[in-house]
Length: 101
Image 1 (cartoon, rainbow, N blue to C red):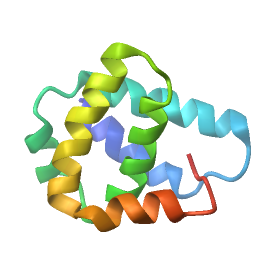
Image 2 (image 1 turned 120 degrees about the vertical axis):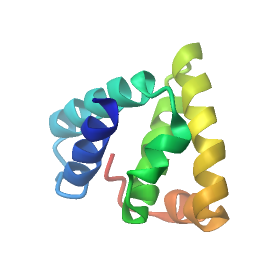
Image 3 (image 1 turned 135 degrees about the horizontal axis):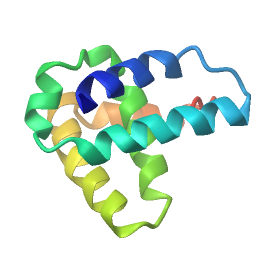
């Protein structure tokens, strides 16, 4: 159930402190979940808007890996997320000084 795993990881991301090991472990869960998601629109129907900004941060982390399949999936989700959440989601993600992911 990748969508459920993603929701759980995004919920936990807000609670993560500055410990890089915790951030890395959470990224692994998010990465596996987003790579397993086939129906991006379906994912958003079960994901609360309060998690959109956190998801956007993880998408940028995925894009920074340079891994082709990861980047492709992150861009697909990024497109749909931007349509749903608007450009403000991108701006909040880029302007946030506290990197929680």
